[in-house]
Image (cartoon, rainbow, N blue to C red; front, side, top):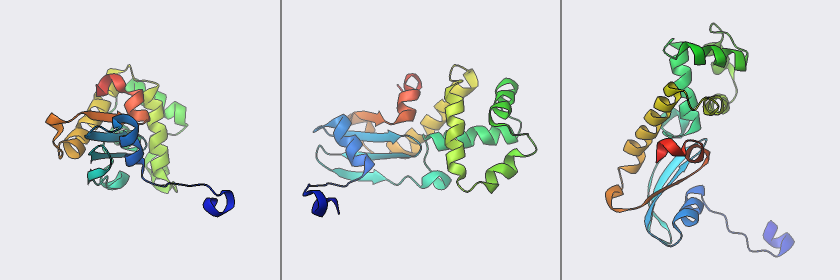
Length: 171
């Protein structure tokens, strides 16, 4: 262990607690992590007192890049995405419409591909469709993961690349 090798004190805890302490310091509030995955908690100024389970990318993770990528892919396979963005997507990822679904299901870690799709969408964040998709993703996060707390009376803070990359939509 590091303690025995380096005689160092090592503290290990959750991303949510680190985010809470980093953005709320000693203030009470709601801390949110919006990255490849998502999470939220009520922080009392020293510890997490409530937490909504994320559910992972199959059962939740609303607001995350993986869910954003999944939302876009779902629109693409159903021919519901805008034509210009869909063509760019197929070219960018070198995949054809007939192979997309099979490719996703054959991947060992499809969640990582969905996160890569979100990076592609970030490059097109001025596209109205992308803005609307991100807004839907964030609204779902807010309804399912923030409204379970006393959100009207507490500050809500967010960290993570989704919060940063789409700050203008989140705020």
